[in-house]
Image (tube, rainbow, N blue to C red; front, side, top):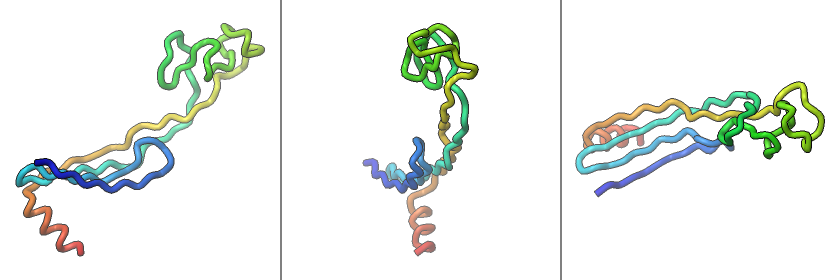
Amino acid sequence: MKKIGALTAATGQGFPPYVNVTFEGDEAIVTVRGEPEIYEGVYVCMHEPGPGNCTPGGPTCNNYCNMAPEKGPMQDHPLRCTHVKEGPYVQVRMPKSEFEAIMERLR
């Protein structure tokens, strides 16, 4: 039987850091994920919708490509956006008794 416990620290962005503990039989699996990487960028004009893409006339279009006259005059730069990338993580497996001993020392 699997038992799961988790602790998160919400930062307002996607992919918050967290600590997750899963027990599978006599084993404890501890997963720790760090802060997400957040960087500023621009939408890339594409003809296929997707993350970080804009399509002519779509909601993230500012007519940088000059293919959406309904969005106004051609702009001198694409629309800015913020990209969020999942933070690095590590996973440790140990006997359940060892995990419980570590937690007891932390109390």
